[in-house]
Image (cartoon, rainbow, N blue to C red; front, side):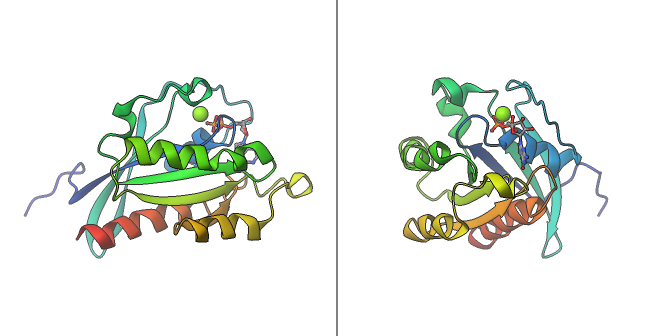
Length: 177
Ligand code: GDP
Ligand code: MG
């Protein structure tokens, strides 16, 4: 069989959700381009970025969607949620309000996304140790209550970024195949 570079066995649409400023766009650029931007503009304008990974010898194309800042105006369209099989729900471990708004984001998912969608909770910005406002155990507890996976990351120093995406892709793969 001849395979072209663009060949893949599975395509998974993953969406990034969570308050503005929590680091969604930088998580995406870190994962797909190994880039981080301290002064990232809220509107980068990218609809999605793609990255292939291999699971069980199969090529999985992750198509990861980022908002162009619409979350700021609560204007995320239904097209954003359509067809998504995974959602990374992100809060900023230094910002209490982004943690308090998680309920709101889960409600958005319940209203707009597929009921089977795999959700993973992410506490981002672990590099800012001195500014931490949400304890790891509180993030873990919230995730447990809602029966979703949990991981803390830093898009700045890249810790756990690959792991977060790989974990959700693996979880989706297991329930898909
Ligand atoms: P978004 O609005 O959720 O897409 O957040 P951005 O990716 O635009 O990030 C908002 C701000 O937080 C920017 O100034 C980023 O440089 C910064 N930021 C994002 N992730 C991290 C992180 O892990 N650590 C630190 N220290 N800053 C971050
Ligand atoms: Mg953004």
